[in-house]
Image (cartoon, rainbow over all chains, first blue to last red; front, top):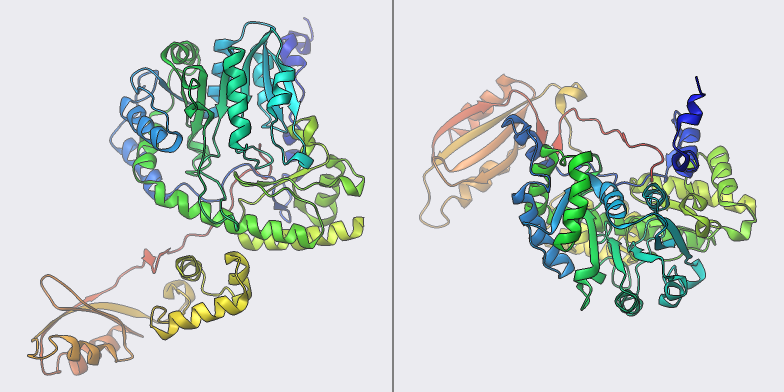
Amino acid sequence: MKPLQDRIAHHVRSLPRSGIRDFFELVVGRDDVISLGVGEPDFCSPWHIREAAIFSLEKGQTSYTSNLGLLSLRQEIAKYVEGLFKVSYDPASEILVTVGVSEALDLVFRALLNPGEEVIYHEPCYVSYNPSIVLAYGKPVTIQTKVDDNFVLRASDVEAAITDKTRIILLNFPTNPTGAVEPVEELEKIAALAIKHDLIVVTDEIYCELLYGGSDGMSPGEHVSIASFPGMRERTVLLHGFSKAFAMTGFRLGYACAPTVLTEAMMKIHQYSMLCAPMMSQQAAIEALKNGAPEVERMRRSYAQRRNLMLKRFAEMDLPCFSPGGAFYMFPDIRKYGLTSKEFALRLLEEESVAVVPGSAFGEAGEGSVRACYATAYEKIEIAMDRMADFVKRLG
Amino acid sequence: MDALLELLQNDARLSTSQLAERLGRSEVEVAAMISDLQAKGAILGYHAVVDPERAGQRHVSALIEVKLTPERNGGFDRLAQRIARFDQVASCYLMSGGYDLAVLVEGEDLREVARFVSEKLSTLDGVVSTATHFQLKVYKQSGFIAGEAKADERLAVSP
């Protein structure tokens, strides 16, 4: 018999292990560690949302739903999306409920890419972008955004990356892991490029409710989606979900909004692989959209306070850090210590029991930074910051 | 003010400097805001929320429905304020519906509460009747679920 290793498909074999997973294994089982390494809210899903899921189970709603998702949920999504993104979608044919935004990303690449076609996206970025494209036989083309330029994705860089094989521009603002928010004027230029070169834009806006506006970061800010620009709705796949703003990561629920033809193509794959998103999660999501707004804002205010704490403490320890406009991550610049991001994170873990994620896990452009998540109890962040201050002092 | 109250209502132990840091204001400003809130009675006080059973305290609590005869000037206020001043009374509210005052009474044992009701409360001029309901078990108190320990069950590192 052939070794089992050899049975693994070539394109899967060549996928690198996730840098996050490597790091997770070092942290797991250690009780003394304060983790700033998570990528999810520290809040439990609000009770009224959990209760809606329980109620749905009590009523015996345990069947499949429509492949697209419950119509009542799609109608609520349409309303919510129109309010938040200023774009309207037909709940009957332009909204697909998925198992998290992760599934939606996988679907969109599989539905739109022929082998070898290119997707342009910006790094540092969420860990699944590269593998999702590769698994769909696409070719990832990355643009390195830089801390010295506030992680802005420059339209000129996008234009330079466009070839006759380019099919998709993938955007993620606010960005995981940097918290960057794209300036509207740059977003407009990117939209113009998409139109000029006839490209599809896939925009992952999962963090869009978590913005820190005003001089002190405490006001909600206003989200601008590229889908709302003239001529963009018909070439944009808008991805959003419930995990971050509603603190519903474990419900695994997201959605894609796109013109009917694209939605239909994604739905074809979804119906054969996933069939539909879990019914109880969909019921919980309806409740979230109907009545969840006050809790979302309460959580956002709490993140804003913790963001400000980290910014202040990083400034005090003279650790340069970009001031993030959204999400719940800080991406401090550690280059002056002469360590790689992995070395920095490993030593911080060993010497001070604080876990952060090496920036290199988010692509080449993440090297030189680490990601510290502030979705952790305020008191714990205070302790973690004290420990980090001691650590960087020793590094000199 | 709202953000300050939200923080204090969630955790009144926060020091002025901790509050100042979270609100992005100076300690002097926060101290002034707090004394203002106290001066106008918006903040009535601060206390720990205790589950007496887990704290091992001898404790009983009862909700007394009280019917009153309202007075020509002032309605229920004079009597209600008089009742509220007793140390045994933890809370006292004027209610709509079938009775007038909801009085939450606390004591070490049943006898103490019963004695308070029969000797102090029901003997007041203007008190028409009382109905005493003893509390049997705490599920939630002042916003806190009883017996619920919070643990962070998230993966330590995730994307």
